[in-house]
Length: 262
Image (cartoon, rainbow, N blue to C red):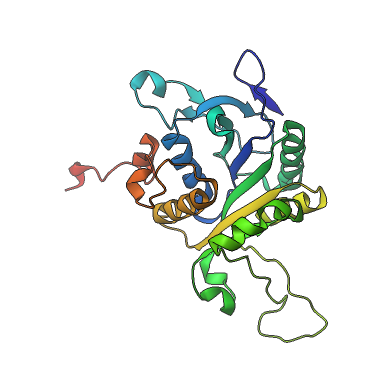
């Protein structure tokens, strides 16, 4: 359930929604951090649900000590009205027994809010790629039939690569088995995409093949990939310094090594 932090509930009619999937390397969440921080987006509410591990913390985008004292929750919504852009940031893992319920909650909220399109930023295990996926860029996309109607020309012009379907049993050739969509390490990505196809929702998935570790470069790549399509930045340059790194990133890998050890 969406709970507004304002006196009146914001309208998301005809807005674009960008959200991450909790997936390998947290690349989608890091990319969303870059978007919220760079565009200085305002927090307009949060999603109240028991499907996420409950947690709270300080403002990850705080620019002053006073801002940093505000408490933030696992699923928050930010908006930039001038860009007709909304962002849902998810900061906690989804409870394994409630993934389907969480997907249903998201689909219901997206439909009731009237978003013109939804973009899910995700990632997938690089080591589980099929042979055909080893070639070229590690970036892929998926798009529902509803969104493809109005975006086919733009996608073709950008030359993006669609996520390949792979054999159900790699290495075995069976004419009776059709290739399937497989996104290992992608969390709810595949399920949310499938649900959106069934509900005729205009949704796209942008993902990158990656490994666990320092995934900041992957986040920049994914954010730039999204910017090529949505033109979120005034300057379309792909230089990393065009994105504003949030203050919370200084704690991504914990504190430094205590000098007392030496």
